[in-house]
Image (cartoon, rainbow, N blue to C red; front, side, top):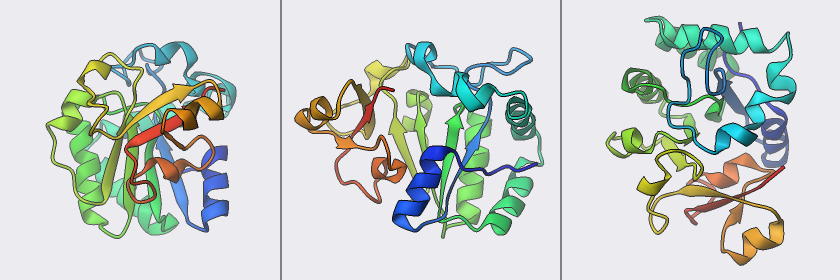
Length: 201
């Protein structure tokens, strides 16, 4: 089972920037067994890209379920470590689908990041409160999503966060950096501006 893959956006990001960028995903919103994988999802559930297209193909969806089950096991850190040694990524996007569904799960990713300080990890997340009270290693970056149940906790002045726009012009006029096509432009390593813009598609 491949734990790290590349969606179309990350393939383009890798090609344009000349970097090895991979993603890790679990089921969007809920697993097949009914377990919530995005506990603080809000309006985003209505338009979540990970609930349609290739993400729900019969040959793709089971892989997300298997990865989710692995995250709940004691083997996750070691299995992911093996995958990182094999794939040798420069950057890992944690969750092109799904979110940090518990503190224990988040801690596993922190443990992984600490084991691989040369790799940079990043996530978009609706789990605002949990991430704000957690100390992350320097090779871990978080971008808060503005469409979840905890969006009121986001300080738009100081917190790195996303906002969705209907056009590139609206995005730029509002002073946001466009990360719609090149995913790493959302991160602190490529963008000093904490305001990250995405164009609705």
